[in-house]
Image (cartoon, rainbow, N blue to C red):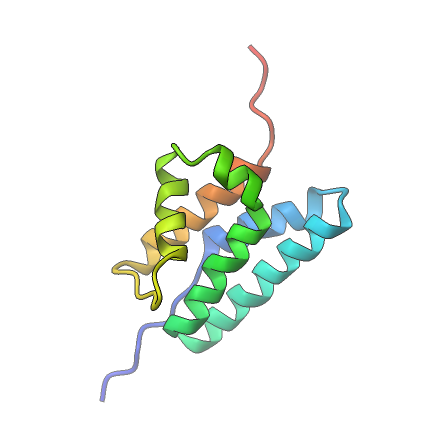
Length: 116
């Protein structure tokens, strides 16, 4: 009998840890902590669809609805929004989902680019 593959979301975890450690906002720190809790749940549950949906919702909440709306033309934000609108989330490639969620968190909360 084959065991299901373990799902690890290293990139999403790293981005959420950065937000949690670097923000001065208690509310944002709580949102990043929520993302980290759901990542732990996903890692433990090998990516059950309901848990993945919770993760997408948590990342969207951490990015903020206003920011998502203001960046609706961004391809990653469009994909995240499409996942939010999907009743049952079963992504084809877990590594691709990890990359997407991390990119959204970095785009919203990552370090500012260096000035030229």
